[in-house]
Image (cartoon, rainbow, N blue to C red):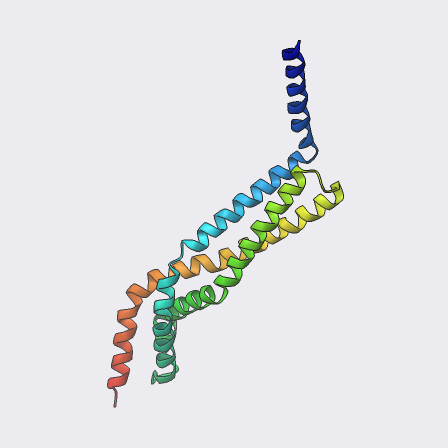
Length: 182
């Protein structure tokens, strides 16, 4: 008899715990999905070689400034389109990533905390349905904005690192040839 009562008691607890999340089951799944997206954005930001960008950035800026200020023919379309364009791509990719990396990383960390808190509140059913939907909408918006920033920063930064290795010797040679002019 004790086993029967214990079994029913255990079954009741399990049934109650399964039903407690049923109210916000879809919302919890959405939070889990947002957390996964956020983790992927974090990995994408980490995939950029930030130390390499910090290493090349001063030389990129110095070389770019020198070429723009000292190239003798300011109307030479070929120079501006084919030569300097690569430098512009590298400069913008590196500068933007280095300028916004910390801000985006803080947003990722903060939003991850908010999502964890929201998930806990949904699991514990501490929110009304209206509040849950409002908070979920806010977090969706935050994750979308972070995704937009990551898309704008990650690709150009990686391209900057890759391009610099081939572009650097040509630009250095060009700067040296300009310096050699009388």
